[in-house]
Amino acid sequence: MPVIRFGVSLEKELLEILDHFAGENLFSNRSQAIRHLITNSLAEKKWHCSNEVAGSVTILYDQRRKGVIDQLAAIRHEHGSLIMSTLHLPVDHNQCLELVAVRGRANDLTNLTDRLRSVRGVLFARVTMTRLTPEEEHVAGK
Image (cartoon, rainbow, N blue to C red; front, side):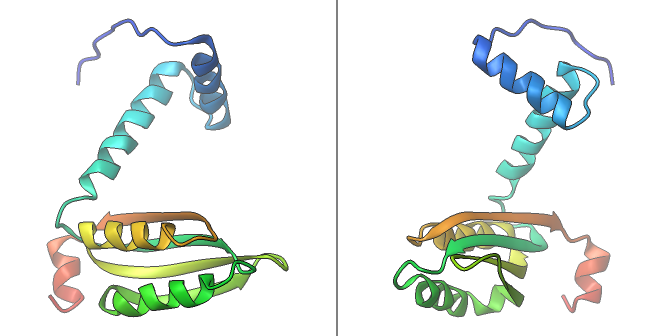
């Protein structure tokens, strides 16, 4: 694929952040870093579709927050058809990490993650997904 060169104007602080990101991720230049960021952004946008996917939701929450555990459990129960397994790991006396293995339509998993993220006391929630191929869908019983 041919490469097209164009100019980009950024504030100094944003350029410093980009350079730091490029260095941390071992990109050899800014173009590679920008390409990576654009590709990931577009991939995440596609997650709002109805493709059949599998993945995980990572949640970090403050267990001292009143009701957080019950609210998360209620949301997981409401979306039980999407959840294959849950792993609960205490990080320290205050924080817990949960890894939730999920499978379903991308937009449903995105909505589940949004619901989990909205609970007071949740410090972080992110879904990671991969689209199932027709062969994988067949093997999985589709």
